[in-house]
Amino acid sequence: MATVGAGTRLFLSNWGVASDPHTYNALGIKYVVNCSCELPFADEVLNFQGLGTADPLHEVEGLQGPFAQQPIHTELRVKLEGRLRVPVQDGADQRICDHFLESCEFLERAVGAQSGHVLIHCKHGQSRSATVLAAFMLHVAKRMGTPTTAEEAL
Image 1: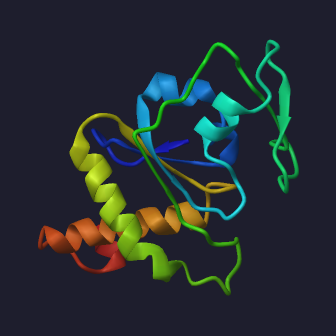
Image 2 (image 1 turned 180 degrees about the vertical axis):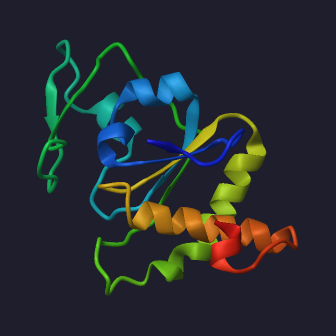
């Protein structure tokens, strides 16, 4: 997980971190941008599926590798105040730019709400979520009348 700048309320992560209820509770995350077509939001998985025994495993359909089975902690609940899905696959042919305006507007509202931190994630936390975050940083820089090139904003 990466914190975006000192004093910021934005976090960037992969699904492994984004599916852990401890992440939400420890960091006060109340808003999520899920940059995937297939990954569920943590409150859907953790609050409504597979509960009943201590730490059962929940298999996330379509997910492979070390994060395919996630422990579900029955004593923890994730309560989100806002969420946005950016439905793009992980591929160079995807038009993630079609979702920049909606993502930036959501992130502006979430950051401005001052009621919790914001998590932006995708499956691996490297491409889609980082692209949405970079678009938001450029959006904020442009609105503030500061650097408008990617290199200067980042």
